[in-house]
Length: 126
Image: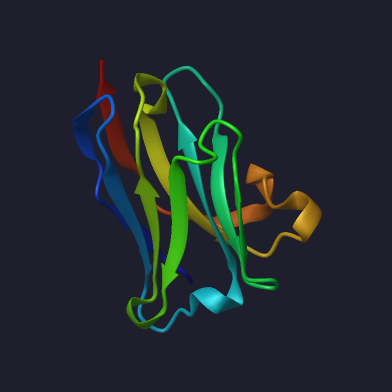
């Protein structure tokens, strides 16, 4: 059983930066999965944020965060880190990391991920 835990959420002002981390239970190797971040704002569906695709080593981003967010793997910590810059009020949401084995064409599909963390709240004030 894979358990994921997110840390790093908080309250910031527009334009600020924030770093989120996703760690897995001991014994779990992230390289066995595709690891993604999704977010959910109140009253809205889960939105794809970013994914690290191990098969190619590439990272893919949602349109709304492209150019502002960076996802990278900290191999020796077995952690996936989401660096969020130039935050906007629209970025306010609960951010979840997720692990699964989707194929390339389904990386952005929330239904393809079967391990989820509890989420961490990010609030951006204007």
